[in-house]
Image (cartoon, rainbow, N blue to C red; front, side, top):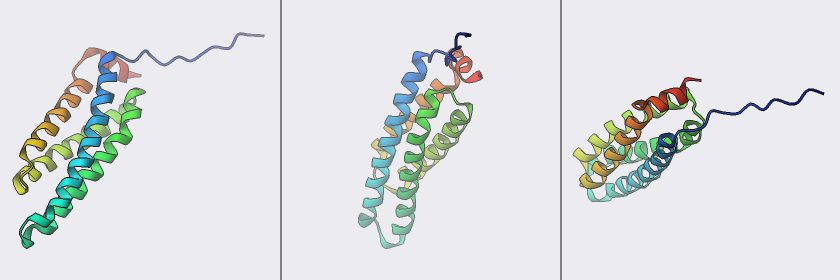
Length: 134
């Protein structure tokens, strides 16, 4: 009998573990921020209610999609890295719109910084490129 060969995944770099934690944190905080923005529609003029509601719903949606991608990032999926990049760029654009239409400037700034850190960590280090190469 031939010994069974184990297929081992490449060891995950520490920076990717940090990215997964940042992505989950970003997704959860986006979902909460979106909920707060959605509830703030009661404090805006009637002409802005629809826009604030749509922005809040979009922030929640992309926050939940970001959480869904976190596990695949941890496994080194190149598609997940691309999806994460797309989701985070859309979220950054939504944060700009949120900052312009609501009073949540401080929360949007913190959220944007977390997302930028996650993007830099996924794309910049050589270790992460090697991890996502296979």
